[in-house]
Image (cartoon, rainbow, N blue to C red; front, side):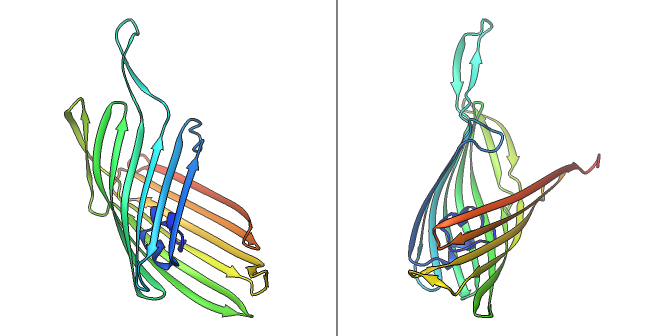
Length: 245
């Protein structure tokens, strides 16, 4: 949530595209997804710096479980089948009131198809990012602080099965806050920075739930000559029932 200058950052914090230079296009593909060995996650992003104060982005992401749900009769004959996937399309806007502070927002449309249930919902995200730049011993360093809130208005999702409305549920109101540190060496080779270091840590919680949900994550990246990137990270999450502890 505190990383910036990357088109894919709009998935985590809409303010993250505020420090882009020019136009950037990126795409990601993930399979398997953690313990879901068949699941596939895809995304494509495009972001452009309109002027010194504003940036605009578009993104499309999808999560496909690659496991169908089936409806059968008493003899086990398949009568119908359904895919299980979630897609999201969003438009993102970021504004810089001043060069080291960015505010951003995104408006998206999410489509759910789970076990024959379908639903569409508007998704609203809001985020801020503050950069502190400083130099010491001729080395460039900076620190980012950032917070984002997803679905701050308590968006509702209507679930439909065979054209009949079954239920309306509220989407989770999620807050993520983080800090990141950047370091780049002054030493260059063929106009490439010899060494870059990026470290980040993040906290996430969900507000509108009967459970206490807390997630912590941290990561480190070493970049050598802007060609070789070594990355490592760790995260932990804990879910507790408010009533049962």
